[in-house]
Image (tube, rainbow over all chains, first blue to last red; front, side):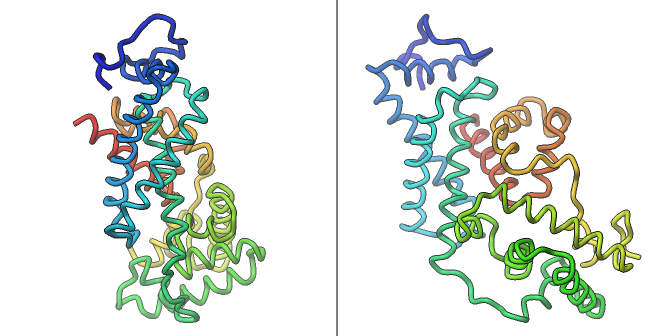
Length: 221
Length: 75
């Protein structure tokens, strides 16, 4: 935002050692006469960031063309709503634009998580277990070891995880469902599912160490 | 790294890991520290966030995107 459009004036509430640009954003968003124009300019930045982020994630998201642009608009719109609703929580510990762009990234993740279910991959069923070693980079020379790994993992999942942990772990690790897509499906939060995965990883690792598949320090026996 | 080793690394958990909620709260600050002082400095200031970003793919993706957005506007 140029200083010509929105000059810094006295009376802006101090939120710490703000850089000049962040101070200007806050002042413009607080002044009724300038707020609408500031919001429009902010939306332009958010939309540009959303488009760039969707392009950056393009290879993994499988969203292209018109659909990608629709998602960018949705992410920018929802980010702007979140930003205006939380403006009083901005404490000036980062640049204002960094704080604002964060909401775009979060919205892009949410949109892609929901979008995944519009055209999900066909489930691989029982074969999915056998493909886990491939996904962790096991080569053909490790075939016997890979089968052993898949079988040990399956036993661990069955024997040590709770039902909830098993459902989340299998969806993410075995079926390859992105965590944000699982969040959308289960109506949960990223933090809650990550915590479930965190605990599940620890339990499975302890099982594999106890049964001699992994060394306690992480190496292979 | 063999398939076993890679899988063992995936299973390894870091007790400093703060989780997605806390990492998201400070992600903008973390990114600005990375830009101003480097990744090591950010890791020293927020060791639990650094541990989380190493382990959580989605939050790591948000971090990469935010860093790209901010540095893109600065360049």
